[in-house]
Image 1 (spheres, one colour):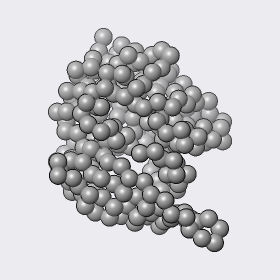
Image 2 (image 1 turned 180 degrees about the vertical axis):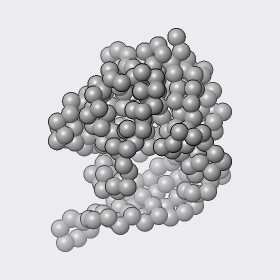
Image 3 (image 1 turned 90 degrees about the vertical axis):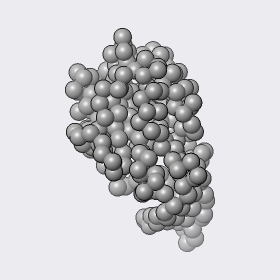
Length: 247
């Protein structure tokens, strides 16, 4: 997925996401492990909304994303908010930093955009080299339940100011991958311009995630329901994993 045009309308279509609340939730988890400041990597940062929030909290933020267009939006946002964030254009499975960080965050089902289990394993293999021993990574994933019961073969409509989006899903035969087709209509003066994005998201099982994590020097220490202190249930749509880099 290029995100070449999507980057310009991403924020308009995610107005329902409370980035400050999500950043505070993740920060509360990091504080449980005495990580209150220092270097933090925001992996697959998109347009940088969470990166800016973490910077406001006092973290020294490095933010990476594979899309130059998303990073351009993120850089503009950081400048407007007068936050000093370092942005790097990198795929998450090819992470390459100048040193190590205390914490890594990967939010809003970015992990689900990896193409298969091998890409998942490559991601943690890369990340283990750039986080302190004992460092904490917090990431969330969409669950198999969400892919099979919520996204599935459904269609969603977003009608926002100056942007109209038709989101069509198709659950593939493996029963865990959803093909997502987005048709955008963006107001430009008196007319609307149409463009399209198409991509897949894969829901990894807990066993696949745990294996990828623990085979690469991390340990799963917590699993939470979305924005909760409780553990996941059968109908949980998003799970937060808290993993620690072992010494």
